[in-house]
Length: 212
Image (cartoon, rainbow, N blue to C red; front, side, top):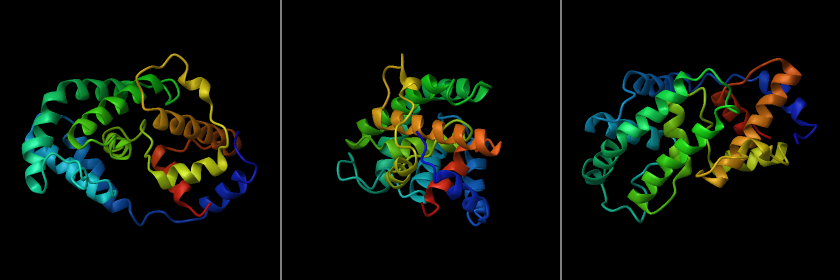
């Protein structure tokens, strides 16, 4: 259920200029579009390093990391990502090829997010669902919502009860990210129904960071 004041909030948001970060974000999008695979050490290190640091979710800033400093990237992270690269790349390619909506692709989206979250957990001892969502978003910006605790808090203010029916029949997913996806799809649908605008995940993330 979307709160009534969301319509006014969205109208105010439409008046704002959110182009300030476009240049930086486009560099990250291009980096992943030009180098989508996970089979080369330096590319993997560059992608995880730049996305993680840019979005305050660096994989090495964790007390349970197996190694500290730069060595963690090339001795631990890169080999593990290369090992899991073929499956991760197949999952992402399947989602990219799909013309279906996020709601219709939810099973693959959530399972892929859980797959990467599990890899990060093995590396750090933490789920790191935020980094997983951000990393996947830059590889597939039309399908993956950007998750973090601030956005989640804001989202719960305007989408009080998520559409849990999206999750029916889906197994092996991160429950917190699954509930977040349900709320985001409901918000996306509300905006489309009331404003005839299909907002992409990036734009919805900006809306949540707008002062709600």
